[in-house]
Length: 258
Ligand code: ZN
Ligand code: FE
Picture 1 (cartoon, rainbow, N blue to C red):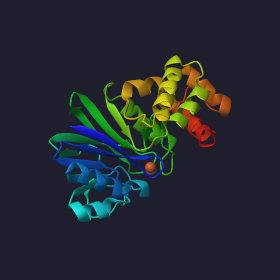
Picture 2 (cartoon, rainbow, N blue to C red):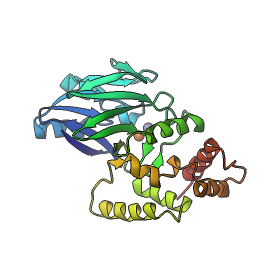
Picture 3 (cartoon, protein in one colour):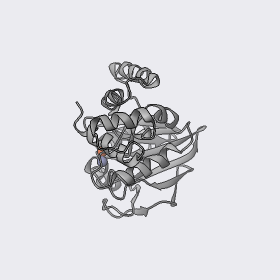
Picture 4 (spheres, helix red, strand yellow):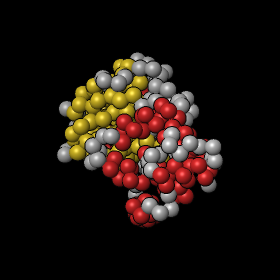
């Protein structure tokens, strides 16, 4: 199986999974990069998987469906370009001979879902849309901090070797924020310098891994005392024993961080 991150817009990746014959694309905000890749490699698009309703994730769905006839799957609780197969927690999608489990991960949007494949070429694979980013998480446009914490906790509990396919190349700016939160986290500083090298060479920093994210992503580390006290340094009324309050403070801090 081949896993490609097709760049789109300024910092999106359209993830394309293919077996040299058939392909699946996740969150095609644009059709053009996908059509080019299909044509160049002689692939037939079998399915389109959508994580949430934002335009940069669904903008290319209708055009791709029209040209390729691909089946569309998406979150049951969101308005995405119809017709599509509505999915929610516990559902399963079979594509390219792989089984993807659907997880409800509200927070960035109210009906956001993720797709988890327990085994693809030797390791699990996660398409998490705008819920989890490397070093960060999505903004809370429709959900609450409690929902986002629960969603992130469930993603963090996936196997450590899970490859994490996020939809945006936000890693460097996330890691600069993470460094402000946890300046003493050696794994984080090491990862930041590795990602700076990758970006300087024009390479994606993704996919990430769940075990790495657990060690460096402040939004997965709200119960660490260093993270909680940094959050309270930003928002002094934060109860440092309350992970929801810590996550809310981190998210507010990050929103204005430059
Ligand atoms: Zn989004
Ligand atoms: Fe997005």
